Image 1 (cartoon, rainbow, N blue to C red):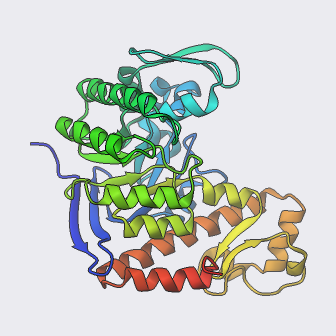
Image 2 (image 1 turned 30 degrees about the horizontal axis):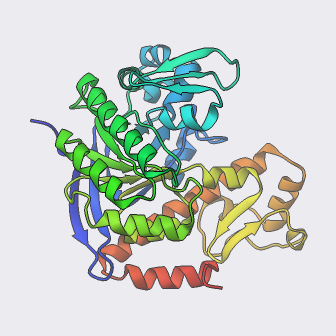
Image 3 (image 1 turned 135 degrees about the vertical axis):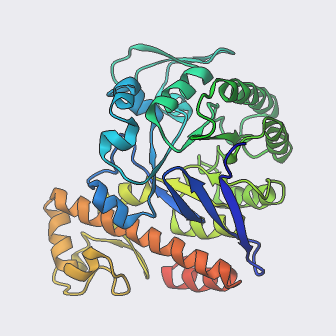
Length: 373
């Protein structure tokens, strides 16, 4: 008997948003949840104890990058990513597919897999559904992804249908190759760009394979927010209710709220850490450019409503100085704060779902953050 990976606990009467529990071998997690991205077995600038403070204990690793450096077999010999980076929480890995398509200008997609070149050295490489699963088995994440193609959102119907058909065949091959079905939940990835009929077709075919969970790929890839939200609203009506739903690569505060309203359980994105490295902070009154001259002598905390380590200990003036001086500490402190902000946002979203008031919360949050100005 396979393990139960997800329990739906409550549906918000105001919006239809879902509150649930995601079960993994390394912890149970309330959903909706935001997962910080630890691309190369680290969340940039933070040590594991800090990552635990600014997350709910579930983070990502990147299959493509860890396969190339230092290698999945080496990481396996250290006890997987958890042992390698000394992480006590749970992990999710992507399939490596998105990087193949986003980083490589020279690639050849065949039925067997993808031939491409190393994004730095130019070395010829090959990744297949079976190879992707083998790498992820070695990396040892609790949740792993099927190998897929992420087609352009606006690809024509013929290309989209051919691409999705191949993704479905690859999903079945990866499912058959997966050795650790009881300890690693393998998710199918729903593709189809902006075409609702092809999205439904992809989901229907993946459900025949019966994955423990389903990811939504191919969104936040250049389409408008309106187009993304319309697709999420549509998918919320057809995705299985008893399986977790993971929206890949989406993590701005407004998208987390709207995604939750549309039934998403899991999110990830590099945005909070990337923004931090460029001196931008999320706060209760919107985004702040920390190097702004107005903050030069400001004695106030970055966000007066935030109780994170950074806001309890440092002034805007000090953070402004660090950013302008290009100090690494600025990146560390702002990364810590931004991830803590999203952790707290997700906590508030879950509470609002349980209290059947997520639409009210959305309206209040959007007004305070500045999305309705």
